[in-house]
Amino acid sequence: MLRAGMLRAGILAVLWLAACAPAAPPSGPAPAPAPSGGPAAAPAPSGAAPAALAATGRPTSVILFITDGASYETWNIAGYWARGERDGAPWSAWPVRLGMTTYPLNTERRPQHSGRPRVGYDPVRAWDTTLIAADDPPQPPAMPGAPARRYPSPFAGYRWLKSDYTDSAAAGTALASGIKTYNNAISVDDFGRPVPLVTETAKAQGFATGVVTSVPFTHATPAVFGANVTERDAYHEIGRQMLRGERLDVVAGAGHPDFDDDGRPRTRPDFTWVAPNDWADLKAGRLGRTLFESTAEIRALAEGRGVPPGRLAIVPRVGSTLQFRRDAKVAGPDPANPSGAAFTRGLPDLSLLTLAALERLGREPKGFFLMVEGGAVDWAAHANDTGRLIEEQLDFERAVAAASRWLARRGRLDRTLLIVLTDHGNGLPLGPESDRIAFQPVVNHGQGRLPGVRWHSGTHTNENTRLWATGPYARCLERWVVLRDPGLADIVRHNADGATIDNTAIAPVMRAALTGGPCPDPGR
Image 1 (cartoon, rainbow, N blue to C red):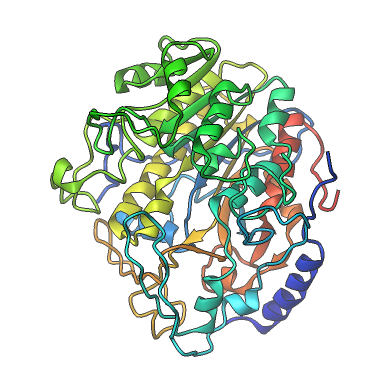
Image 2 (image 1 turned 180 degrees about the vertical axis):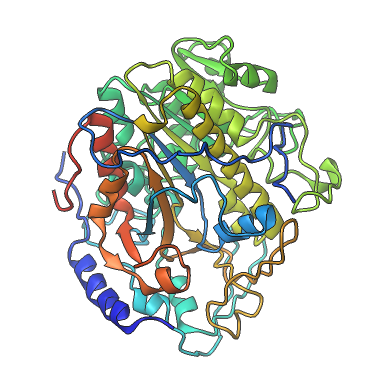
């Protein structure tokens, strides 16, 4: 039962949050083995949480891990399959645990030229268990080829959570810049103006920078760290800025035009994700960026062999995702996997791409910034595909564990700020009887067995999300608490008091870490 005092505090907090919303800136079984045959997920090194968690006064490397589209139960779903418990992920013991609101400035698809916030997060409405008529209209398809579906909302809170949600572009822009914007915006504000990015702060400090993803490298989340465009689907322009620009030393992800989603050569290239001229120039070495395509090349890079100087592009020989969109009929069966489908052999996983990026970025003595995205977690949630959601989330877990081990082996774990979060919820997965029991948790059926899940949406949600952090400057995030969400504490059981920050807090703290400044204060 929600604590009344916390509930009243939540009401007051949401009023404060609305008044203080950022405005526009001034003008101007054991876990499934890795698909590439790598090791299964392993915990982060013991003692991963360093003693110093506040501002150090010294420039600090930063790794931001984003599992895209993870509702609050998504984390538990993967844990139940892999370990039979919700804990035990590489970040589970990290000392900073906060909620994070993700709503956009507005839900329009074009600049509104006002900078005024129109939506927000209200914990009272989010956890409202009032029975209502479950007469929701069908949701339009969230993914190409998917059918329209109805998701009845028997409780008022469900319906509210399925409204006024962010997309990955607006959410990513907030994470990369600290500025809220309209849905569809790639690092531009509500006036269509470019916003300053944490990657630019890192480059100004002489740091190396990179992004890694399991979906096309020009997709929204990696794009916000290396491009400024008014529409997220402008993939060719995004690719041009990311590949030809100097904000990113490493660009790594799917989207290879010459291979399909099963890693097979195409008869004709698919230039959805990158422009033909940019791809031709990249392959010919005319962009000042070395291209790595084969798994053997990527593995050698990840092992520190033949790491070239300069900028890199790491694009495995696969279409839109590393594994999520593989055809089960092509891959064949594998009952040991949550989806029942074998992984496509010979492809790198997210951890291998992450290690390859770290081998290049880690050679910059001043430090680095890296964003790692489990992008296909979101795609699996859109599809309500519990089995493949687990596979993608465990792939993300392996990447976090691999990066932690890499840092520990080099004595850099206590000199790196690590943040694990999601950009928004997706699908609202709850327990199998959550259509009649409000916010029933997902049911744990034990290790290696699919949990009991009922999906309540096929698209994004306005949930309070979960965040973990460790390393220098991690405690700085706690200064940005804007509300205490009783549901986060009593239902999600994420932290003791429901302490929640907004997604606009991440960029200021990362900037402070990158520059060695003091913990930033909200409102400055």
